[in-house]
Length: 72
Image 1 (cartoon, rainbow, N blue to C red):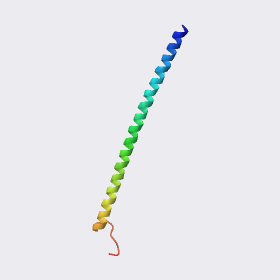
Image 2 (cartoon, helix red, strand yellow; image 1 turned 180 degrees about the horizontal axis):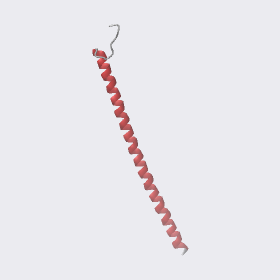
Image 3 (cartoon, rainbow, N blue to C red; image 1 turned 30 degrees about the vertical axis):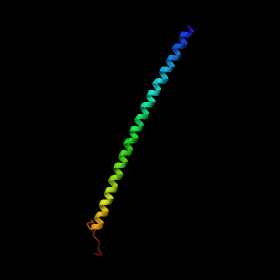
Image 4 (tube, rainbow, N blue to C red; image 1 turned 135 degrees about the vertical axis):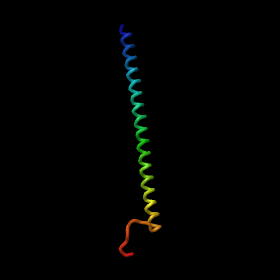
């Protein structure tokens, strides 16, 4: 009887450890996906800011800026 109870107990522990591992793995995958999305969003924002800066610089070089100087 003791052996049966010990075997059942060991099986229960094994199942619980295995199920926890899956949960941890799923959470890790979700975190990695979220990090990837954050990096992608930050790269897009940086690209937009660079493009805006390049457009402003181009306008300055060509003299198409919106700011009117009083000295001119």
